Length: 209
Image (cartoon, rainbow, N blue to C red; front, side, top):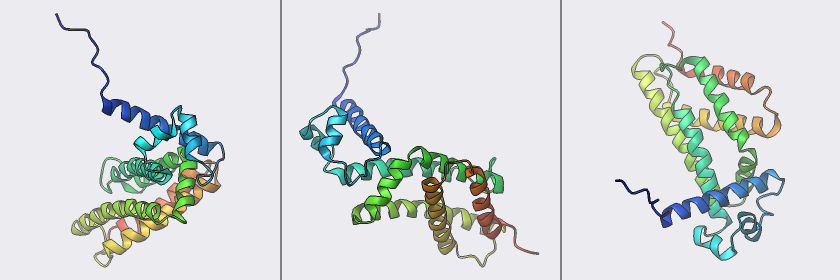
């Protein structure tokens, strides 16, 4: 007869659970209106129900926390972006618009965190470089897409994939960040649609015969 004894939680499981709780309470604090600069390690530890010494077992400092949070934020948005293909089942300009809208929705759910990242990136080079590295990942994916489209004859050969991808990613990121910061989400579909059209008709249309 199979044993019904539950396997004890491993140290790795406990660590993952505690890290998740710490990251969660930080987002809660940010949503409450506290800026990341004002937020102290003591506040984070108290909200998570742990001691300062326990906090430092899992994180080097507040910057390390923000780096992990921003990494998670970008990972999910990258997965949304990378799932779109020009000729995929949800491709085309409408599919691209839906992709932008999903990214906006994702960032809007974490608007306080996005604001904190922008806040700290303004004065901390580590956070700034990490954010740029994540943007480079988006650009690299788009470079691959553009090159494939050029080989298939669906994107003009005169387009520089590397430069175009950088401009699209940087420009799109700024539009999305501004939209999340300033709007309430009611016009997200319209903004996503226009953003998609501006890139689709410039990059993915078939070249003139």
